[in-house]
Image (cartoon, rainbow, N blue to C red; front, side):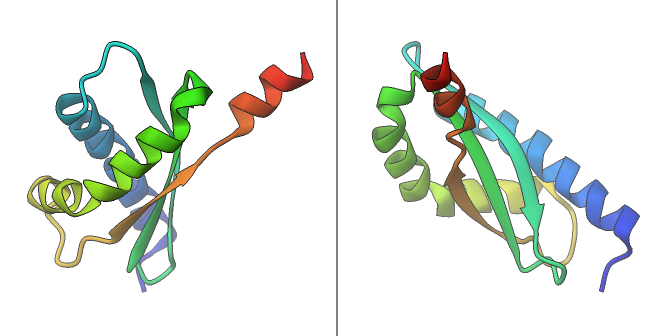
Length: 104
């Protein structure tokens, strides 16, 4: 079981590296994709990646694309993150931005 500090560092590295990978691999002028949070399981087997998509209307298309490319992103992340077992990634839509816009 990793220490709390190591666990947080790994989450930060995943957020940074995966953000770079998504930016490099999914260059689109009509959509902004942001990683809002990374949560890993205590055993570091899984990393839930919360993403915010703007404009929100394109969220279904982009989430499908992210899920389809998850294996490719995983292999790139494995190369950049030099730890024995890299957590498997799962993308989750962060709809807080849409909820905030709806309230206004």
